[in-house]
Length: 355
Image (cartoon, rainbow, N blue to C red; front, side, top):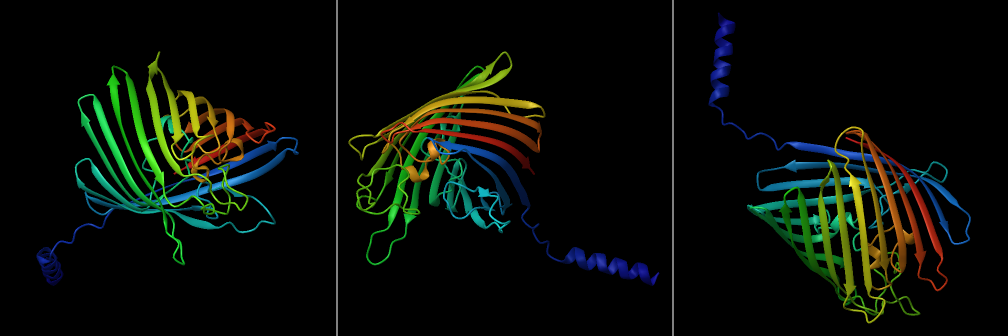
C-alpha cells in the first residue's frame, strides 16, 4: 500500500510540473563517394588516381520558422572541390566546414539564409557553366517563391563576401539577383530564369583563391584585367515521353565587364531518373566557355581541367542499385583555348553510398 501511495504522489507531482517543449528534432544525412579518375592533357602521360569525398550533415528544425544546418566534408579549402586523392603514404585527410547556416522563414514563401550556405540560385539542368556544384557561398540570401495555379514564380537576392582585405584595401563582394518561373503544360514543366551577378573590387587585384585565375585574363603581374558583371539565363523543359522521364536544357552567360572573350553557353539533355531501385539516367551536354565569360574560380572544376577558355562535350551514365547505392560514369572531352587547341580528356568512375 505504501508503495502505491508513493507512486501516486510521484505521478501527481510530475503532472503539476510545467511541460517542457520537446527538443528540436535532428536529421542526419551524408554520403561517401569513391572515385577512380583518369586524366590526359595534350601529349602528357595518362594519369590515374583514386579519390574520396565524404559529407556528413545535420539539420535541426528549431521551430516552424527557424532551422540550423551544418555539414562537414573532406577537403583542403578549395571552394569548388571536396575531393581528396588517396596518396601519398596513407596521409591523414583533412575535414572542413562545408555548410554552417541558418534559415529563417518569417512569412509563407519567404526565407532568409545566412552563413556558409548551399548555392541558392536555380541552375537549369544542374548546369555548372557558372557555378560548380560543390560551391557553398558565404553571406546572406533572401529567397521568395509562390505558386499560382500552374505557375510557380521565384526570386533570389544575395550579398556574398568574396575577400576580407586588410591595410586599407576595399573588401570584395558578389551582389546578385535571380528571378524565374516554372509553368506546367499537362505532363510537362517549363522553367525559365534570368540573373545578374556583380563582382566588386576585382580589377587590378590578384585572384581571390590560390593566386589562380582559372582561365580568366590577367596581366603580367597576375592581376585581373576585367570586371565580372554577368548576365545568366536558363531554360529547361522536363516531362515524360512513353513513361520515360527527360530534361532538355540550355544555359547562356555573358560578361558585361569584358569587351571580348565574354560569352558562354551550354545545351544538353538527360533521359531517365534515379528515383527507385534499378533505375538509370543518361545525359549529354555541349558547352563553349570563353575566357572572361564567367568567373573561373567558381565555375566547373572538372571540365577542361577546370575554369574557363574551354569547349567540348560531357557524357554521363548513372545507375541506382537501391536508395543507398549508386554507380556513375562521366566522360569529359574538351579542348583548351590555349592557342594550340590542347585536348583535355577526363574519365570518372564513381561509387556513391548514401545514408
